[in-house]
Image (tube, rainbow, N blue to C red; front, top):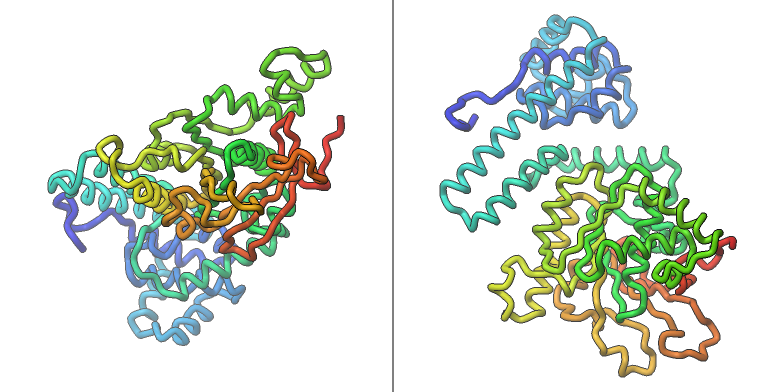
Length: 447
């Protein structure tokens, strides 16, 4: 075991680890509670880790679990020996009772957290003492390590495919029980959900459009819908262009279905006031957090998000306004290189935070010169790596923006240009400009 800060042995509790294993063998009913608290890597002892991993795998596949069946499974896996047999007898002998299984599990979990903190402290100290990068980058490293520990995640390293398959099977079983038609958070737009499978963890979703098409509006629409449909989730919105008050006013127009112009002028009817008051209360109860800063970097956003409890969705408006990691010192660098770097960092951030990240993106003027002005992937400004890094790219197009005589006014085309979770194609939405509101075509507001 490596030495950390002069310690030759890291925090652990052998008796608690043994008692967790023993409790699961004495009474399999406690296994469901234990596996919610512990993972194999939480065990300090190699043999305890192997026993727990085997029991966990058996539990996932609904196998009978006791000392006899565990022994048989260990033989099948090629991990059984006289030493293992003697150790199992010892575990059964030292386990006082299965009633306290969850308490034993919490002790093991606490010791595992202390070990990870010790390791993180060593890594941070080494980086600082050796001068591995600028102070800001070392601070970012420190925050990332502590965040990963808090989230219960292990970064990097090789992992057996059997462990990965167990996780996949477990997630599949949970999804089957939930009865949900999509694996991710619902956007509140049924047809869009069906096309992109909702908003999934670690996905980077680009919403691209020309100015005035409604890319900010659809992002706010989705935020409001997520807040309604998943009330326990926190939503972080980062605006590099609009103020908090402007965003809040737009949210109020969407929620109350009172015209945005009226909310700007204050010319409200008694019925409007009733809606506004009710909507103010409703929005205030939502865990929507807004930051306005025209100089935001990905590191700034990531650091802020790590401090948000139960974060479920991040929205950024918009990509081309973001500042590179190097700030002003890199202002003369090729803009395509900078934007490509930012998009790559956004994808890494989405994976680190393990939440969907929606980022609005500006389209170039290339479509303006075409007869068919519907956007294409190549229209992304300073596209470079953007289309490569994004999991999903959605472009907005409204024919009435270009053609006032269109036969389909207030119909928005949500063109899915890239989709790692399914096919590309077009989803039509209803656009209500007075409320800056997008909805499914079969959804109408009852005046």
